[in-house]
Image (cartoon, rainbow, N blue to C red; front, side, top):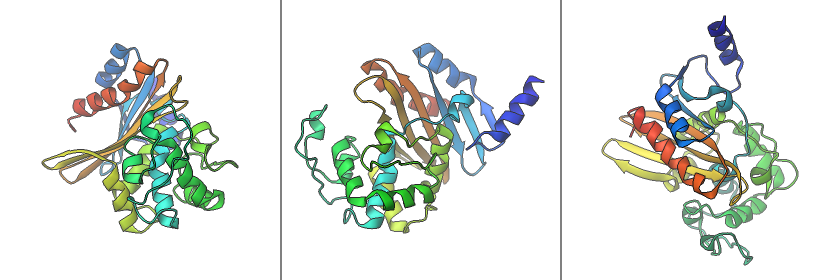
Length: 259
């Protein structure tokens, strides 16, 4: 009865294919780290999910700075910036991190997760154009509310880890409703590491930075012609937990033989 219930639950979860496999080794990573969270990997070619904590994996949270990926795509599509090297102002106000107190282009701003620069990008795009594209991307609940420069930081926009992997699969495969060169430009600025026959793309996020909140690491591995998108989120209770986003994410990818 329990297994039948689990199968029925999976079929009805938004953002999940019917084929999900739990991974006990990934579960052990989270348990040993004392972290509440989830890791979802989507094997695009096999249309299969694997990971830990599927219930949390389909639960929606505020995307925080993972939204810098769609924000970049939309800004380029509507001409809010000319290209990823077009400089945007941060506004001159004190910021929680010194790295954010600089005018910079998207190429650098996404690397240091510069919030005020991306808020300026969103203001240039405007609420209606932003709403149109977020809906076209089928990004989570697609609800951006009425404030164009905070909806991904404070809500109402929310997305699940599973939905993140499906959105990223479209970007990785050049299948978003955007010109292909724009998708390529954004893929380029979120490339983190590469080796022979593999590339790792990714972006972190931290709701309520630098305080307690939900932390993210999302991205994909392209290896030997196949694409594996992933999304991790976890509860950040102390600032030291933030580093565990990438640490646990990479460890999970290594367990799955992708890094």
